[in-house]
Image (cartoon, rainbow, N blue to C red; front, side):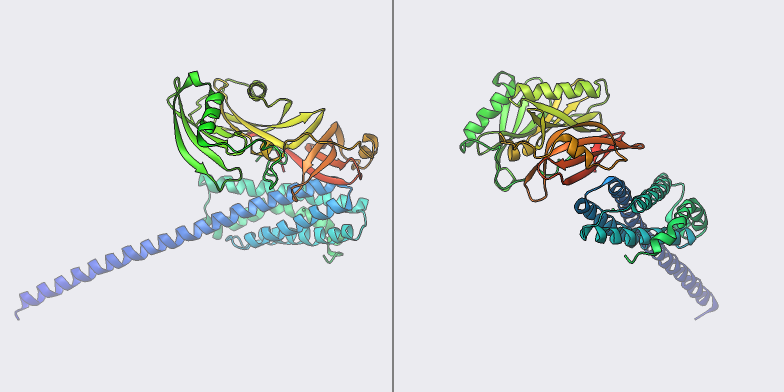
Length: 450
């Protein structure tokens, strides 16, 4: 083999080696990118869970601050204990290891221990002392600081101002400084360490499913009769065509499903009619709503009139949520001045022209009935005396609220305020027991409760 052949073979070997190096490097880079993406996704998921649980801790602490009933306070404090522990779990899964995180972890740990110890006191029938309530208020204020910091960090991560890689390196010190305000909780460390051991929807909107559906009255109907109910609902003269999509047997309310094309609409409505009684379970039209011209007050009245025209009378708007220039208003039955939160109907109103885009009646069909309410055993003045003195009462009345056991409780409802937070407090009209406390959240998207 001459020298020229050897040189060509040598050069070819170098080229092949170079190509193999490039290919190996490319795949190594791809693997690293995939690994980093997987890590970032895990970090984002853990951070989102951390923010959610810290938010829960803040809201339950707010409830605990005004609770006077040992039984209800014990439930709230147990929830604080659980959520603060879960927050610590997710805090440990994000790449932040500096002193600020240590203080945050310490804070959550002490919230967990302290809430657990107070819940034990309540379970043993002891009322919380003024010092206990003061400590809860202090912890609540620090939890607000922590939540604000986490929300700021969340916004910076979302905007790309910082990323997890930078936070693992030079970002730690910056974040440690930003959460340094959590260190102010150290002034109650002595108290805490003495212990061994908190509707996006309206109120009670998730308590709608019942085995005995008392509002679902009437006999079973067939598909043809269900179609006639659709014609009644929209008006036969307005309908161009009705398509049957089948019978949904496994739904909470077994129903016939239809698509409806109206003469003046490009889009089709979907509508479900219950087999039992032929009730409208839900109806919905999806269209783009580009602007907001209708006020919330006008939307409330439009929804109320829409319900009245369809036989749902004495309905009162309670809470709402707004998304994409469409507002969903929760209406509860308000018979004889008693708000029955289980009897819930949701109405979607387009804010460009006030058109009703949807209705959902499951809560009403599950729960609505004429109730024989007992005369209250305690007066509203007695019920008011059982409320924490810190609550500035804004309004009061009576309400029926659901329980997790699918039962109902007749209560006095007090709406009140502590500083800039609003609450709903429910006192049993028969026993005087504090049955529930809800925090009212006024958000850009609507009025909600937790």
